[in-house]
Image 1 (tube, rainbow, N blue to C red):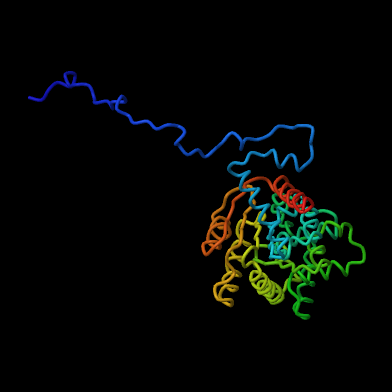
Image 2 (cartoon, rainbow, N blue to C red; image 1 turned 60 degrees about the horizontal axis):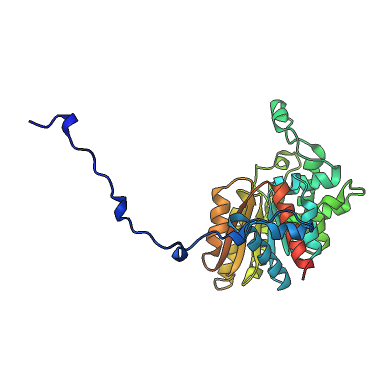
Amino acid sequence: MSKERGSRGAPREADLARVRTVPIALRPNKVRAEEFAGVPGEDRSFGAFLAALPDVLKAQDFRRVVEATVRAAKRKRAVIVMLGGHVVKTGVGPVLMDLMKRGVITHLAMNGSAAIHDYEVARFGGTSEDVAAGLKDGSFGMAEETGRGLNEAFIAGQQHGWGMGESVARALEAVPKLLHPEHSVILAAHRHWIPVTVHAALGAEIIHQHPAASGAAIGDTSHRDFRRLAASCEELHQGGVVLNLGSAVIMPEVFLKALTVARNLNGGKPTEFTTADFDMQRHYRPRVNVVQRPVLAGGEGFEITGHHELMIPLLGWAVAEALDAG
């Protein structure tokens, strides 16, 4: 007969007296006291703030992205900046324009949403409608001037052999009186002779539902911009930087294909460059198509998570600080 449950012996226990310990002096540490954050002192400059950041985890990664961007600018390597629409809406365009003036950004690429918001801010002084309210009665995305102005710009671009970004810039230049041209990243890039490209997703943007929309013109100008981005990717070799700011789908997908074209035409180059994704949330495509896959052949990729209206000014100011310091 089996023993009664209550008569069984107690379960075995590990004998901690036999545990082998190691001297702490021989143990590798991931964090050291000298890496901790500093507190506000007499020097309250932005440079002092940056220096006071802890040299651990994402603060360390942030510094490395800044260093790579500054190094690329000094060595005249490509710095490709890719935008999602929310970046334009949060008002950080002036920061990007400052980096253009400093000669840091060498190519500005964006999805269609970013171009629409940029166009509306420059021309009308406001953007970002109430989607839920407009969806109820079918008025969402039906702004006449936006849809007609941009679609006519694309048609003109198709006729003259311009890219979509160039077409938008030329259309804005032709408007007699823009309310806020100083806030347009598209105009700024165009005026600084920096390639500005727009990468459309048919049916995903409000201007595609306008009566003036031409699929042929949209496809022609945006495909030309894809070829221009692929050409710019060639300049990333050995020290360039790619910054994906707030695009979770379109720009990571477009960049991966543009990079493939560049490598196909240049014997596997470019390699040995830095990529970074700045966004509020973590997504599959930016992580895989920007941070991981492109640098498997050489380079580094980083993820920096935070709100655009905070992180992008920090990035811009940090790069400017480092450049001014020499």
